[in-house]
Length: 116
Length: 114
Image (cartoon, rainbow over all chains, first blue to last red; front, side):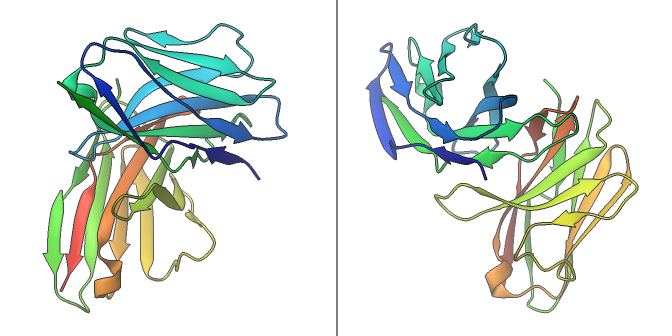
C-alpha cells in the first residue's frame, strides 16, 4: 500500500518570502502521479500542481514549483513570493497510474499561514 | 480548470431522515467520481468510487446501505445519507476525474444532523 507523509503540521512565512513544504511517499510502483492540492478556509480543494513520475523535469505553475526526487521518494512544494491568499491547508497526494481512474492517497496536510 | 459543483452547500436535517447530495461536472463528462468525508482539521477520507452505469465501490468500513451512491449520467453522481444520525454530521466532498488521472473537487457539503 502507498503512504504519503507530510512531516510539517504547520508552517508560517512572511509575505513575499519563499517557503518549501515537504512530502515523502512510499511505493513499489514505477509509474505514478503526484499532486499538491490547496484547501483554503472556504474548504474548496484546489489543484496546485501535478507531476508525472516518468518525467524528470520538475513541474512549475507560476509561483509554485516542485522538487521531485524519485529515488528519494520526495516531492516538495516551493511557493515563491508568498501572498496572503496562499494561506491554506496543503495536501500532498499520490496516485498510481493503472490506465484507469484511480484513487488518491493523501498526506495529513500542512497548514500554511502567510503573515504580513 | 474543470468545474465541479455540489448541491446543497449546507444542510441541516433531523435524525432519522435521509439527505441527498448532488455532484455535477459542469463542463466535462466524468465516468468516475469519488466521494470523500472530511472531519475538522483532518485529511480527506475516501468513502467510495462512483462509476457511471455501474455499482459504486465502497472503501472498507463504509456502510453501503447507509451511504447510497448513484452515478446515473456522465455529469451527475449523488450521495444519499439514509437514516442520518448525529455521528454522520461532517463535510462531504466529491471529485470528478478529467482524463483518467486528475481529480477536480466540488466545493463540499456541510451536513449537520440534529
